[in-house]
Image (cartoon, helix red, strand yellow):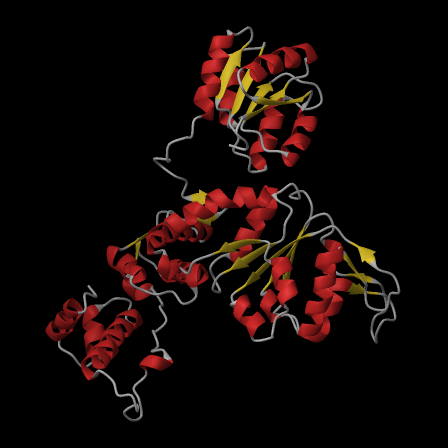
Length: 449
């Protein structure tokens, strides 16, 4: 809870009722906040998160149901008990649907209120069926469940966010979710691909320019920071920014201002910055390729997305999600995936992560003419040996353990053959010049299937 004494927010347009209820709750040991309407209550919640909200349904300006909808859209999970003199089954159902914890009609006994408060403020038990999708992000692994719980908290803050993870893990999807859950969701969300725009053009793209600033600049052009005013700017692959632009970005982060090319005047801007990178920025700082002061300014709040190979339990769920998406899009509703095709996907390492899995499923749906996606329809990249495992031209000075080295090469070639043939063992055996029996023996030996 937010303090030693639980904080309760009373939202009711009846001042005398607010005062009466406030006195009662203070005597019960709670700290009380009050608001006369929904707008005032929303402002209060942005400054201090209460542990529970007591909400009247019938209020002028913004009704209780509209307020409740706003609270949940902003990502606040605070329990809400609805109190109203206009008790009806219909309003109770609507309030519950919008996420109210409970419902208490006026007039009520103080003992009933006391009991409901204690129940609502108890720490909830772990979810028996935790969500498997949140803001378009799919997963059931512990890492994804932690992410689902973290995102609303990060969204409510105004601090800058750094999202790290390999390419294809869904960094932009997470950035969009943070924006959509934040108070800035009605304002622009602007994406900048720092690695996809040449350095010579990136400055004018970010900060804009005045007419005549350079050859071809016939009109004023607002930059992407100006376009994101009031909202969020997402700097994808921020680790690719050239040093001269890192200096200028630092000024925007520190002073919320920048100077367009060819302009003598600074422009003030109100933006939240979310950055993403697939690089180790701490290593980039140590190597002198990324400014340490900028790194600390961008990395106030951090989110790390694990690669798909580290959360394999999410693969079947993601397959189902993408299969539904593309089978509906291509008019192949009801298309499924065979057990062997799913097994091949579960054993694949996905160097391109979730993006690669989505591409594989999209391509398979397009090519499959039967009721099921089969292993031969899958197109999986052949796995390559990392440099440390390549066959040496000669014996290294420090020597090597020959049996372990050869076993590792054999295991990797078996996996590569399976990947190349979409899991078809007889074809994989032929690729390696083995009999099917010998191939199966080696799979069992290395516990590959």
